[in-house]
Image (spheres, helix red, strand yellow):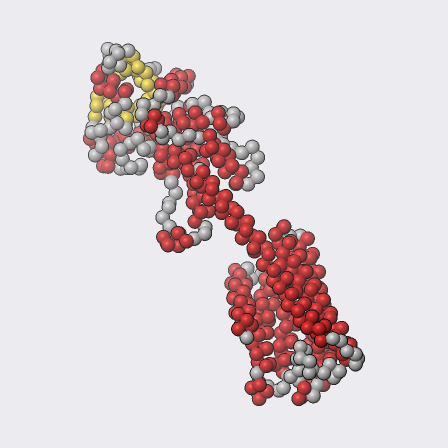
Length: 528
């Protein structure tokens, strides 16, 4: 009784789920059929309890609950057959006619059972097939069970045939499940065929061992179990595949951390919103790993797109192997971290797959890049940058090779700055961005510890190659004027970097508080 109640509850929950899906897709005929099948299968249990209740005799005519229960069972198998029929041929115009033709044998069987029950003496209408006291030589009882068992065999065979046809057109996971389900339906059909044989032999006066009667029930139970296994098989296989994908995403998420941290350090504004709607739900959600994984992949790709102009400056060649490009990536990251602009706006293709089969192939290339990438975070890297002169030399060569960009209000133009060294007296050249604001020109730096800034503070004047007035007097400015220059330069640059002592996207009022440590020089025309 408890097991039957649990099964009825499970069927009811499955029915509610199907009804929810029907509300979203009301034109799905196969879903309508499976919902009707679940409804009749769930209704079978309360009708069975009513048929077994002695109190039912005083409410309805004797045998009516049993008739209703058998009709409900046959309707359940009828809609199960139609579910596989509509699934196997959803676009077939004749499938509707075929479904209506299946109503005829169902109606014939229901009417035959009603006639058989009416022909049975009233005191014998509470018979059970599993009971040894049931006399199958009585025409009404034998006819009742014969037509019912024969129709169930027919419905099961048809459902198995449609399921196999549906399996041939399905994917691997669904195909395996449908074949197992069809096998379960076949086992139940064999059980029904044995029941038909038992009824015929008993009605004709012959005798069969009780073990055969027990075997029909056991085969039906086995067939039902195999059918349920087949129905659950696609979901189980999908869950196993999901677990494998989850584990792969979790591993890749951790492996991509060095590359992500390096890009996030220079492009912090690219970080996507990480505030979950509910903290506790975020911690227990199985989808958390997937969300974090794709967020990291997207942020890395965004960072590489923005870094690509700097990569072009340092000779990144997408046709060369990834492991030969790491040096260019490190130089571009350090150059961008220092807040210096690129000489061009053209982009290069970074870690692109040769053949894009799916999104995962793109991630494979990122993992290969990350494998050869060494983050610039060692003790030596945090000290003097031994590659700075190389990077500056490359940038100077790129600037000199291009036509000088015109000065535009609230924009910057790349130039080569020449200033005398404070200790050696030799001329030092540096690639620099000259920003124009209110008709004046400025150069700026996140701090005053850089060599070119200290040289400029000592020299007081600077030469800008290929300018109409190449020599300028450099005037250090602070306060509101300096804050406006920094704000204009960073807006023209498109993003900030961690080298600046304020948060990315800071307003002029916030920047002003740091102008005593930053370096902003106003360039005034000076001959000398």
